[in-house]
Amino acid sequence: MSKAPVRPPVPAPAAPAPAIAPEAAPVEEKKPEKKQKPKAPKRRIQVHKLYKLDGASLTRLRKECQRCGRGYFMGQHGNRMTCGNCGYTTYQSKA
Ligand SMILES: [Zn+2]
Image 1 (tube, protein in one colour):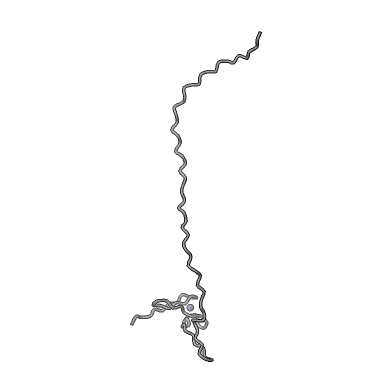
Image 2: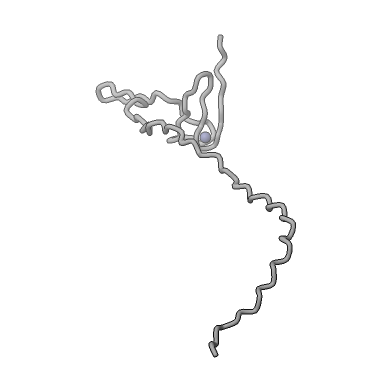
């Protein structure tokens, strides 16, 4: 007697389940690429432009801040002067 392994008949696979709508693929959120702004070259304060040395006398070319007093100079911008320490600003009239 041959003992051929008798495999039980494989039950026919049930009718394929109705294909489930494939889940919406997870939308990969695309991060907006960061644009690297071209950096402006660092500008160092050119202190030598703030003073004028005339022989032995020294003149300061920037006004001192009225609020902060000595040692605090006003930055000059187009039509105004601003203190970088306290923010005091004076506007120059165009006249
Ligand atoms: Zn000030």
